Length: 296
Image 1 (cartoon, rainbow, N blue to C red):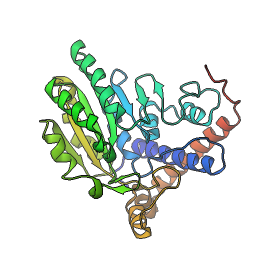
Image 2 (cartoon, helix red, strand yellow):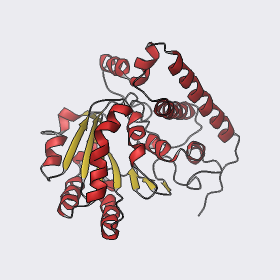
Image 3 (cartoon, rainbow, N blue to C red):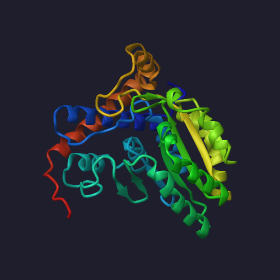
Image 4 (cartoon, rainbow, N blue to C red):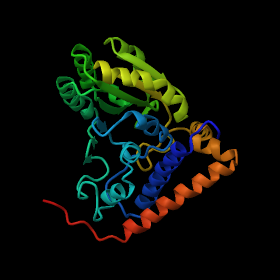
């Protein structure tokens, strides 16, 4: 527990309870469409938060609630958006996967953000702003040819382009070893791009490792790839989980939340209860709102 900063942990817990709330709403038929939770990966955007400012640009993906919450803290606005209530961050027409708010966008199109990010990074380079475009992808996205075209251009033109790879080793229901020859690290390095691998789930440890490389990418306008070796605690979307029970049990044992909770630490339990209550209050408030009038 002493390795975690209270603010980081509280934000991770808020993301966790937000995602659990969404799964509950779907089970009750209160949300249409689908959802992809980031349970198990909550610490990633929390670790990146100190190095991303309002002048950077962020492109998230289908599993982007945690990114959005950590980088904007617009929890009520996001929940209103997803539930189709008044006050949604995109007038409740973007839903869960297609958001555009201030300097962050999400897209449900596999690999789309990888290419879009090049344009933003090129703009930063031309304007010499010392900002960067952060693009979040999963390991499954490395099956798209656009990834390699984009990496080639980011390296060739020396763009402030930071690729955040959340490698949970499974693309929907297909294991990484079943669809990838070689590994992500060698693919990144083949383009002459700086690469960092993160295996910790502790934001304090992660921030120490990524601080200088990220600041360097911004200052000197050069691409960077950060691969988080992580785990997906929940199913791909709502219930499509084909993993064996033994594997799921092991993943849950290694889940940062379960490890910390098992220590029965008073400070953790206090933060856990605080986060849970905050999300419950926001949920109650949002569900009482009127349905949004969709903008045509």
